[in-house]
Image 1 (cartoon, rainbow, N blue to C red):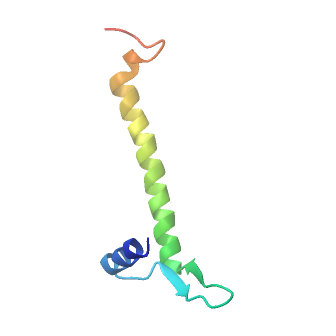
Image 2: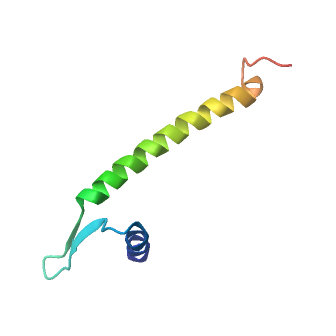
Length: 71
């Protein structure tokens, strides 16, 4: 997982996580402000894609669903 995060940070040009190494009580990580903004935008894009794909599916395959019109 860390390799994926470090690769993403390198490609994006900013840090996603602010990490503190662990000791006896363990470490911690939290999203940076940029990481939070990036995650928010990603989740919005994901929701938009899901809605759009549902619309495309309905437009192209509704006839195959129960109660759909056959041609």
